[in-house]
Amino acid sequence: MMTVQQGVDNRTDTADRKVKLGRVAYGAATIAAFDILAGEPILKIEGPEVSVPDRYTIQIDEDTHIVPDEMAGRYLNHHCSPNARFDFDTWTLVATRFIKQGEEIAFNYLTTEWDMAAPFDCFCESRACFGRIAGYKNLTDAQKSQCEPWCSPFLRSKMAAAVRP
Image (cartoon, rainbow, N blue to C red; front, side):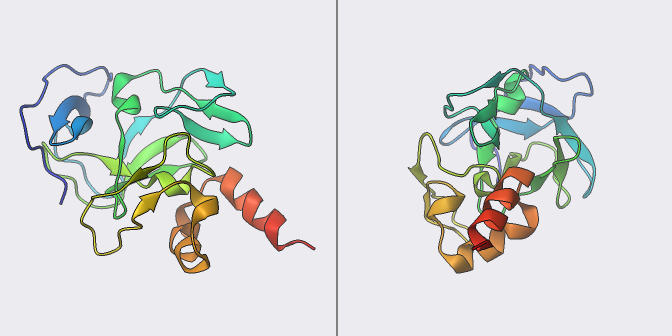
């Protein structure tokens, strides 16, 4: 379970107040302001599109990335066994399980990023940890299969193109 390690910032920047910014052992994070039920929408990701990715952008196409408008969207951290995933029809983050108030909200970056702008070593301590987080294209076939059900339309199109002769 991902829990807050340090003090939580009580400021929020979302209209529905489901999330707030906080701090965990490794830095800023998006934290559940209240208990969130499995399947419940958490946060809609909207913002300007850019062609050059950075550590805060989310990839939506080959050369297109979203810079989340809300600070809570910018501080969504990675976890190999996340408690949230994207509904790509609406670009809304949805809880994959019950999330307790005060718990960090995280998604698997390997479900949206083809080649990470800022790769890193993961220390999530999940039994399913991928280790080096460098983008979907850098995964083994077995790891790709693990992520595939939750991958973005862009990554699915890359997978389909790789299968075609």
